[in-house]
Length: 65
Picture (cartoon, rainbow, N blue to C red):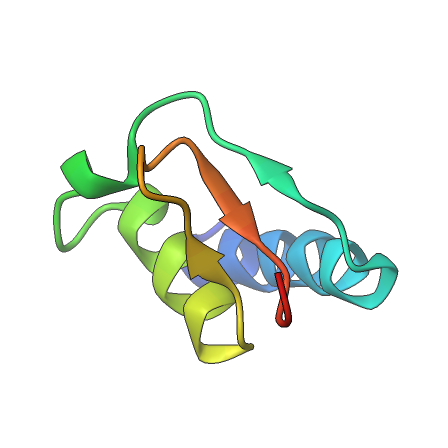
């Protein structure tokens, strides 16, 4: 699977979580995400959809929370 194909599949997975309004628990602190990594891209995508990073950086909260 190419990097582009991987991102398309990952984005589809993220979109399903967004549609359900899931509170997303992260395996690592979002504050430590490094630009250029898939983890960083995922966080940026979710933030662009209205999610917010919790104070401790371990969760992404849906809009309105």
